[in-house]
Image (cartoon, rainbow, N blue to C red):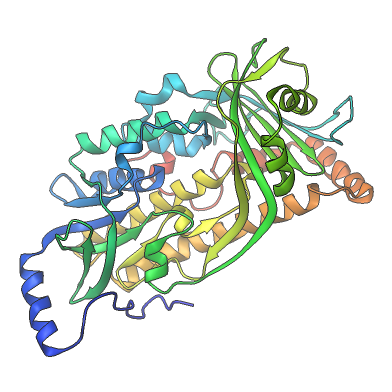
Length: 439
């Protein structure tokens, strides 16, 4: 377990006097940045834009990712963007670039059945309507967006905002003398006030910092791809709870949907190895015929599913964001939204500190970020883990219990409204950016 305030492990520097003299000379020659971000995915790029807004145009923000030039590769994955995350992307000036490629989710239908059941009775529906005004009239509680389109829009916005995008890897770092010294593949050192790890579930920065995780696998894989279908979906999302795991049908622009198909890992591998005609039969059995004929238009790919939580979200002048801090089951479609909540919270605490002249990477400031995010993240992780275990099984007794529970939620407007607000990201202490405000 990594202590939040413990010195980070030395990764390539010697403590000898001669080495110390060399290190001092290197610091004098090192490039400078206020914040260094490692990882140029959706969370890392969003954080760079949020910090640019909060710290102003004179702040130096460097973002490292050796795969930035591959942002044009389409793996068929899409993400659910909650209403609050859409507000943040609007505030950051990105949403207008992707709005035409995003599809609002206006209705969510939940069923519970066996794979071969002909009929799938509906136990729960959400239409996004809230009586407390948390959502504006007609505002969808979520949108579906192709990851490729969002990634490209964020890269373009980061370039326009003057973010220093470096297509290289950080090979080592250490915290020293009120800053973080980074070494990269280019050989040019950089000294930053704050280092942020946005480099994914297998975060090298987290590993080098000595921060351990609590994690386990589910023995499941998520098969993801995009399908085209005959009839319009009308903004309706469906989640069919099946014994092997949820099968989600999520609307995209036009007569297209994103499919997230959860199976036991061995079965997922078997399905992907099937001839296309037999795979098509398996798909139709789960997808149903409400939308007419259906066919894949991107290559199905499987990704292993698991749970992981960093034991600390911060270190010495270090913060973990997104999958580097937490990975949850996709059963509720909240993975990216949790990362964007991290982004909004960290950008807000850093901005607040900088505006009153405080060291925005001090233990006090970073601890505020950790307190803000850890409980919310843990609660969501526990909820998704419990839901997956409750629904992904063959128990008739559990099925009867959960179906009664779903039916009760469907008949209680206030409780249903709480679920909708949670799906929209509007529960708890909501950061400014997620309320649509600027920093």
